[in-house]
Image (cartoon, rainbow, N blue to C red; front, side, top):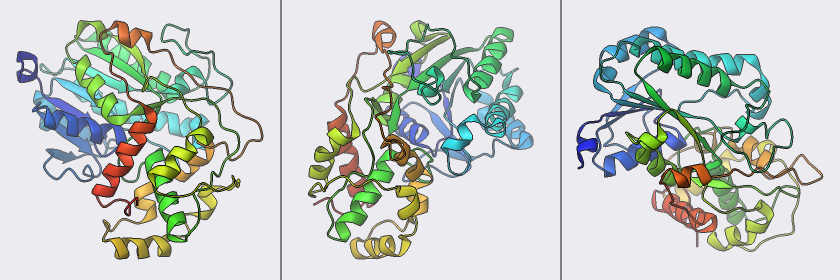
Length: 366
């Protein structure tokens, strides 16, 4: 390990989520001391140091600050509160205020920490207003803040004030649609597509695209994001800065569909618009049979997918009749800061679905 690695201990908050789980795994492989915190333990990471924590409890956060977090030098905040049904809650005040309170409950007790020196915060494309109106292309970190209400701004303003009043430093990340593994996640396209494909295949049906004309978008591999976050630790180019991050290419869902069908060893059917959120949660019995037949981990559809079928409906434009405007981010600032890794999105999808097959999350792909 380098001197930097020997001098840090990373606390990953929201360790059971897509980003948190990938980061914990990456740090463990890199032999960097790490502890994960969340209400549930990270799925399939039995060797991870983990502490349960309810961020809505001020008392629990205060106790954690005095114990597990007392020697943490870097804190990565990847926790998120979403309301049932997901998308409608993005513009509701209780969703925003809950996310602010969770961050504040955690960081307020750490103001006087003599060890903590850096906080990493996650945002996303909604920072550019892509969910409320067509965004400027590309989204650039130096653009003026988009004028809409968002918990991003509440958390960011709190964090900036905290760092201004202490010796803390921060880095803010704005990833595109994130692909990785986690249970109960509200925005997990891998789980949504994987479960849908497995159910279709079990019924002898083709992999039918269920949306309308999709917009041009980008993705980010959770493992790539984890490497970028680790790269930023104690790197002066990332001090008190905001960075977009993507895989480096662009795609449209309906154009990617034949490649997805090939990954699953399926034929592509004619597109048929349907809402996965209205049809697939009712297929628990079908999924249970697949679990028994293939010896899969005994997770229900709800445990695997969370609210992600609602997210998939939005990503596939199942509600719209015209293609949504593109959501494209510039990553020039990140490259200039020294992180230049990229990932082909189709290759990423193949790698992740094969990994989920190996983990007994999904049935055999072929």
